[in-house]
Image (cartoon, rainbow, N blue to C red; front, side, top):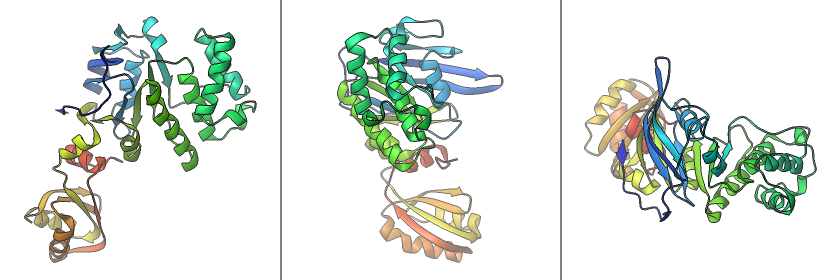
Length: 325
């Protein structure tokens, strides 16, 4: 793993809220998580960014004490976590991919039910329910049966349930999957507000733009391993802040890739189906020679695009494949 000294301002004299060391989890012959280590400080949003099947959900399942690690350990607020450990789970709020709400109950009743399971009650619970409904944007729908809610509203309520008892750590497992753009933005706004309360957040996603928007530090995870971690700017420095040129076309794509490798401005060429993704220095200057070389090699171009470095570029650099794979 490429480890970067973070420039995040999220620090704590009391130590991390979550500390994961050397986590390993196997399913038969498959090693789903292979030596994963990271920590999260109070008020920090930490992202696990990777494609489906990268090991994100298995990692957070061990972090939440839902499954046992084959090796390694997790501590929440200094306490050892595991499937049979009750005390550290009181510090934790978990928002899984699958909805955990009662459709016949309204939003307020759902929150009240789960709050009582957490030992809350009386004025404190009623006040906290109002706060949470405001935060997740459902105050005006509090008395409506949740079976009538849209998918995005149900996911926002799911988040509200997870943070109702004021946990030290909130774990969100791809909370925007399958929701409409408006609801997705509302969910992201809710998550952005959490760090101001000092809450640590562990956020998994395969959407690059979510990680860039929300996370103080990001771990790029693939094939069960953390390939690199750091702030967005630190991760982008791994590829020397190179520009990207994407060529879309047909014909002699492989031959074009080979010849493009030889250009002085080209640092890397990645084949992605019928696309060629080039990491280059000064793309506006290099694009003319890139297009000419690809054409001479027999590649018939349908489209050419230029973009500045982003987390997708870093993922390609580290793994040799696109984040969506």
